[in-house]
Length: 607
Image (cartoon, rainbow, N blue to C red):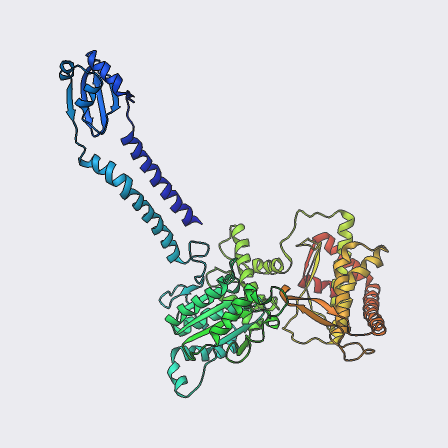
């Protein structure tokens, strides 16, 4: 749009300049009066005319008082003959100077050739040149560039944007899988000679922020080949057929620069399962997907073009995409473990000065479940916090506080609680912390605070000491007790219930229902799952659950959910009642300091 506006302004200025030229040559400062030949004859007879200049049919008359007038003579006869026909006296006509002017030079060229013929053609050619230049640029929304591919290309010569596997921490298994693709792009002859076919498509599957895009770019850097990068949503446009045309253009350009890599980010934007009943066979998204399927399964095997794609929703992709010959290799990318998190933190802390007390291993221990993007954001937030305080280095305090900011949101210091509300919030959070610390299978308490963060008026931060991949029924039951501890702490102390426990109750109810319906942890109902989720494909997520059990079983499910909740509530109430003095002690310290760190909390529990 900026280029179109710029070109429009240039053309407008040209028109203004041309109009100025016209006005300069066609206007006169004196604006002479036009008279008829009869009036001219009368003025000659009255001896008022001094000079007549003849230019073709135009007459320029100069009177003796230097007044200028114009007239037009007859085309069939000469000026003298015409004037005599109008009754001009011959002797008086001889006293008038008559000059014949021949039009020539630059004025003749300007008025006769350039302005009426050459100038319009030049303007038309200039306008067409601007339009064709926009078409060649191939940018979306300009001229005729709709069908051009919007893929950004990174050439091997561009070392600033290239990366390698050494720039990415963790993901060891994924790197090993992709090293085969790198080897094929570098040494494709040895694969072809033995009859092996490298996978045409590699699908990177993993949660958001785990490094799918970085890994795809690193493959091109390792292989030293061109890298075409495009998002799935950039194929589909307002106009019908644009998506499939862009797909053809992308693969044509890639084949010209083979060997190369095409990376399609967020493949699920165009690769969702077909036949959703919305739009029929003429759905633009489906036409684009069909074209991708054709391009990936063409008649040219081993043409040196490898397609990488990334998604975090492989369950909604069309089955034709995942069959052999297309995306026949899927690589799973998991969230980093503690060692990978430490390596990722080292990479993002390279260009940031750290104080000597910073221990990145300690930060890695405090961030289980963080993705690579979360860790990058954590380090950046710590650097921002240090800069706001005019520090020259990032300290361990900045990094630890950034963990809470990433998890819970920024502190809301303007959210000031009244004395009664502060006391209720303190007992609520103290109840969570006390029950969590009293049970053997819960995560250790890192911090307790009644300072509002995000949407929470207070929080109890629990983080595991090591990464967990499996959870037991006992752990879930104790977690239920921790979730309900704040509710029952308020009820025990104030004999009243507030809305502060609403989110805890929602989480507890959802967890108890999943124990029964998803994990088969109900002794009465046994190892079964209940309810089938139905995907509405065009919305891209599960929004409907089919009831595949009877009303009697539904009643039993509700009873089992109540049993889990009641058992957890009984356990939480027992702990809070038996340790009431410790609950009051933690609460008073919270009211006094508003925040209790791990070491101080452990000292309180020992006392």
